[in-house]
Image 1 (cartoon, rainbow, N blue to C red):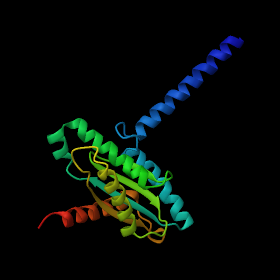
Image 2 (image 1 turned 90 degrees about the vertical axis):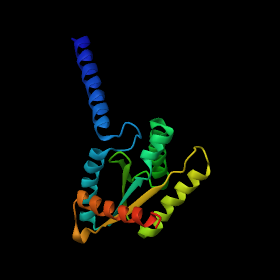
Image 3 (image 1 turned 45 degrees about the vertical axis):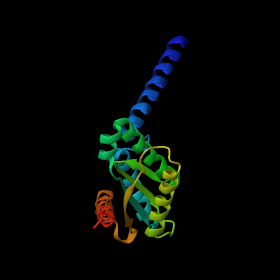
Image 4 (image 1 turned 30 degrees about the horizontal axis):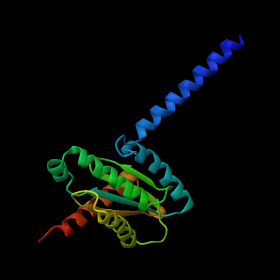
Amino acid sequence: PAAAVQGIARDISERKRAEEVLRNMSLTDPLTGVYNRRGAVTLADQQLKVAERLGRSLLIVYADLNHLKQINDTYGHTAGDAALLEVAEVLRETFRESDIVARIGGDEFVVMMESTGADENTLRRRLLDTLTARNARGARPFDLSLSVGIARFDPERARAFEELMVEADRRMYEDKRAALPR
């Protein structure tokens, strides 16, 4: 009987580990190791509820890697994947460990963070400064470039995460258009 109980306990432990691996795989982007869209939405919905209850403001940063298609076409998909990995690293380096960093599409990333009192322009500048420092290392034949949009969650006027992402995405496209040569 003792051996049977140990066998059952071992089977349960292995099953729990397998379930945890599958859960992590379902919430994480396999290339970059940051959350995927499902992971972002799951965690963000929870964070929004907490922020609303505590009366805290949150920021949603929407960042798009510019020229990914050109990088892929010129240098190959391995270089494109490396660029995406580097953007994820830049985001992790720029933001706190407690912030939610996610790759939500091919070249699009979202960060959800508690507002620290810094305004959107300061936050954007900090991100772009980190990116500029990374580019200065000259480790690749192209520079990384991001377009950035930021939306604010106001606990007095609570909105769903998807709505906030749409607003941040719209602002990101405004940033992208402003950077185009005239």
